[in-house]
Length: 156
Length: 78
Image (tube, rainbow over all chains, first blue to last red; front, side, top):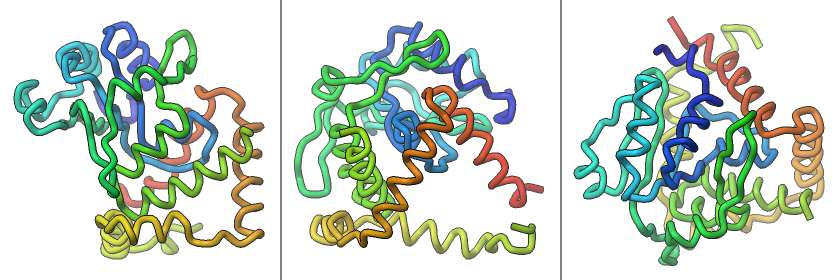
């Protein structure tokens, strides 16, 4: 399947149906919340026990994993790709630039459910999304946090 | 913007490296906490309100960004 034909809503529906504990993070989650930012990729943080479920869902879209589930667990991340590029984080925990531990299960317990057509998509809360941006620790992550802070002003 | 106005591949790569480099905790917080001018803040708030009103549902927002990205990246293809 070529990227231009990629039906992201069907992909999100397939992820939900798979039962994988998957959080959409990154800039596409920012878009969902109401921030007009551009991005080429999809970023998910997935429970490491659910890699196989996600891969099965992705298979219907010809998205191929670049690592076996075992290697992905060892590396803490992998990519699903064809013309599309889906970065998948699978660590149980990640550390922010200032050493704070971010736990997937905590983010999952505070997840926000968003309706996309007939499907449900899960994203972190705004504060947790800010936390995930502190994991990246890059200038673009800092810029994204500044935008998320503005978004909080609008939402409050 | 015409095709000729788009930055070169080298310029895009240089910008990518600049924005995607790892920062120390101190440098990162300096970025995050840099003062925001009132004009900059108002512009950001205006843009967020426009986007949320123009595209009230997450599905519409995602579809818009996918179209916008396709438009933006087209001149770099082929």
